[in-house]
Image 1 (spheres, rainbow, N blue to C red):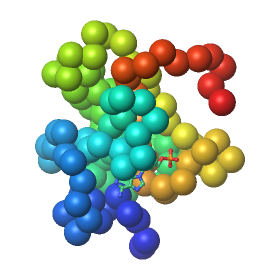
Image 2: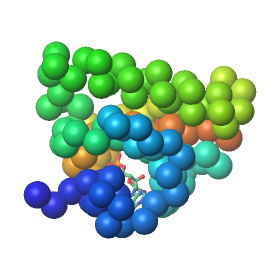
Image 3: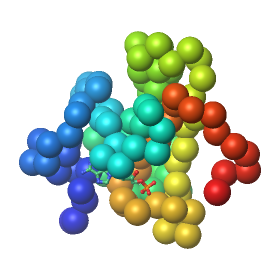
Image 4: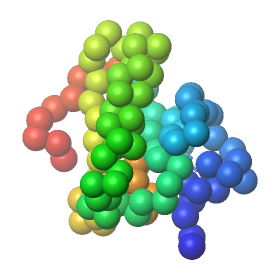
Length: 112
Ligand code: AMP
């Protein structure tokens, strides 16, 4: 399986890791789109959000709660955007589920 983020989880590819526990990893995006741009990923291989099922409920909730914690630790002033691109036409380029945590600038709506 060609999964770039599994290589980051396995420390085969370096990343600036912000947070890690037994279920998830958070690291800085290599091509930041905002002053703070962190990717939060499950260690379990789930290619995209729509592949998750009810058995992943706790894991997905854990990712959201940890996003809150990371934002608080980085003092993001409760101002951030979470993005999950699902599928190539929605902008997904890496097929290992990831949540973008973006902060440090203003964001427009609708997103591009
Ligand atoms: P997406 O387009 O939603 O699939 O997001 C994939 C993200 O992974 C992009 O924002 C990339 O900049 C980021 N990315 C790709 N390779 C790496 C890497 N080696 N380390 C950190 N971030 C990466």
